[in-house]
Image (tube, helix red, strand yellow):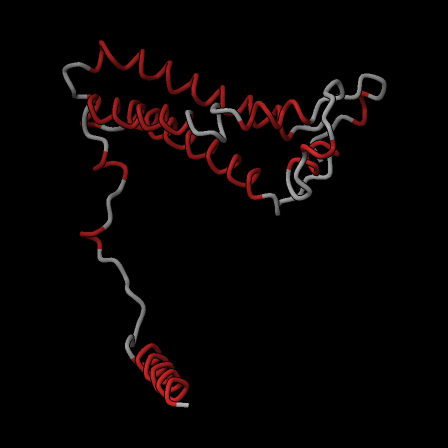
Length: 179
């Protein structure tokens, strides 16, 4: 009897503290926020963001394996034993009945666009950051960095198109719309 009373009192105390402890939500002040213009100030910073884009691409959801495996599951020429498929995930991908509730596909979409966003930050900094444009190493490094960022974007967009684009119907070209 005593442990249940102690548990009830502890729970009541925690609920009372939890509901009365905060009067308002935390709001960040401007000195706590870091905008892209002040985050990327030099060619070295651009290289760091580019390296983070490569780091995002080595994720299992981008080029680390899952995108390749799921792409193979969606083809007509794969043979898969039913007992090797999970009921909620790979079986749906194999049968072509995928939904947004499959966490692996949601994560794959998110990780691709995280790498694309990092590549876009590089391109934006190379085009419009006054500090980056004034860097003495700009002329030597910028073309390589721009090419790498464009390649990262292209690879990620290719993977996303390969996994989620509707197939082209050769027999009915008028029906090939993005709607």
